Length: 271
Image (cartoon, rainbow, N blue to C red; front, top):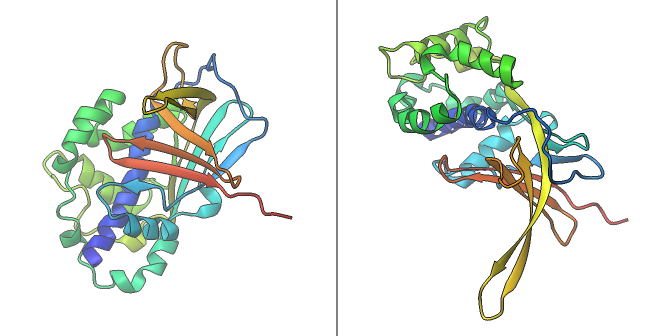
């Protein structure tokens, strides 16, 4: 149980890092086609619909419910054409809630299987293709590049923190395959870790005809994030729906990484 729990916590942190790589190539130019909402739309993170295929859905949802700072984690569609994704992990609150579960945990043994080589396929075949220059041997420089050139703000991962410094040293060591140092002190990590990503976006409507006994036309609305040409779609596309009860949902799915990120705006209360 302890091993499963600590791996799930670290996978939640990996989700944040993965999203940085995915959003890295959203440009800051204006998108020519599509439209914007009449008022800002702020979606709470839907922990039940946000998924990592490698982690049981109920377990991940439970961890996210504890780990996320709900007030400072959201997806927002602004009327100015700016998409914002803010994910904030309350590390201190998470550890406080799981203190009894993690007591006596051997971090070295629990994270032995989380290695750089186990991520090689994703990093070499996916992340490096999308983000040239990404290098596990130069983590700090890669993160600085994101902030300075792409406007991706990463907070909490500061080498002035002894445990973060230890983590970076472990990752950057070319002679070491471990991703997590065996002697990492979870209680020494920063209280809060997270990312803020902003990029241009537009809403686009599309229709799909499904050939069955009678042809059925299905209407879709997409949130297209990042610059793209009029005859193409950007990489980041969220499906956006307004349900019959008034609830609004937004979902991004990446089959390669096995990730779904979802947001929701609850239906307005009846007067």
